[in-house]
Amino acid sequence: MNRPKRIARLGAVVLSASLVLAACGGGDDKADNPSDGSSTGESSSPAAAGTQLYFVDGNTANYSEDFDPGTLEGVKATYPGAELGDDFKKRLLTVNSKLKDFTYGPESYDATITAALAAIAAKADSGKAIGSKMQEVSSEGEKCTEFQACADLLAKGTDIDYDGVSGPIDLNSTGSPSAATIGIFQYGADNNYSNLDYVTGEIPDVTSLKADQKISGDIPKGDGTLTVGTLLPQSGDLAFLGPPEFAGVDLAVKDINAAGGVNGKPVVQVKADSGDGTPNIAPSETDKLLAAKADVIVGAASSSVSLSVIDRITAAGVAQISPANTSTAFDTYADNGLYFRTAPSDVLQGQVMASTVAGDGKTNIAILARQDSYGEALADNVKKFFEQAGGTVVSFQLYDPNAATFSAEVQKIKAEDPDAIVLISFDETKKIVPELIKAGLGQGG
Image (cartoon, rainbow, N blue to C red):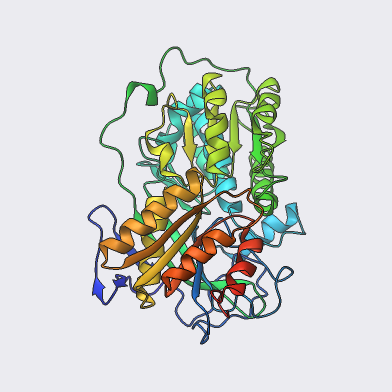
């Protein structure tokens, strides 16, 4: 790790009062690539005739089979997650040898491990029992990094602080990480991405919890068997995230059961497809998990999908923990104290993206984002932090992700002549990028 540094924005060093950021790694050194490692991207942006593009976690993927070589060369991207070591990559590949990306695989692993440790700490497996111990096992105890070691400490009556493969979990009072790492990446000529840097930051907790954000009433013991349900994308706009997320949960269950299970019994897993698209199949898939007596549900990947099922899950007394939800809507949601996530709020990614864009010398930018809870929240945070740094958002466009074309939004952006575009998107990136290029706005437009 290099010496921590502050991030320059528009020629000045600006730090939010609520966030403390430090960059490490990256630079000209080839850091760990969360994709398959095949990217040949350089660490400095190539000269481009078009407009500099920036991606976020929803559309940072390997596009080597989707675009002509060089289409995305120089595009920069951000998404949550600490530097991922080769050992854990290899372990995920033992579960699914066809993985092309590892995005949110570590967070899925940690979500499952944390829930299992919470069940051990509670000596019970009901959703409420798990929820009552999630914060406790992830902060302010003796640090441990492996399930077996953590479980052994709990058996001795020792308070633990589980630090996972995705970084310190350290859940705050609303069930979200209080600190996290955001990776900064760049695309090469092969349309795949490699790491430039990692930025760590602290995320402020809410000042007080409302009654509907706390666990109340009796806390049942459960049926003695921890059942983990997975509501993750096998289809839909985020289907590319499904394989590493499922692999993360599968590996965690394997490790837990190899260490003796939870409270003396093997963990059972049941799977469902969150869909993450149209039609919305998540509610009916959630009902299948509840009927299968899931005690905790890992998912969904999409914030909008989670918002469509969170009431179903928490009303049933089941804990929900997402490896990928980043919308700020969950910070104040009436979840009965049963919603958690191992991905950080978009307050952090928004600041890191704004800092990255400003650090590249961009002063007049456009933001093109999905019109949903994820896209709007992240777009608002990018805008806020970029403007706080003295930059100008000349065009702020929200689009219907189910639209057949995005030409109207693209033309509005073109009319404002921005020097950069932040694209907050999912799989529709494959449709939007060609329209940007056609309008002379793409990376090489």
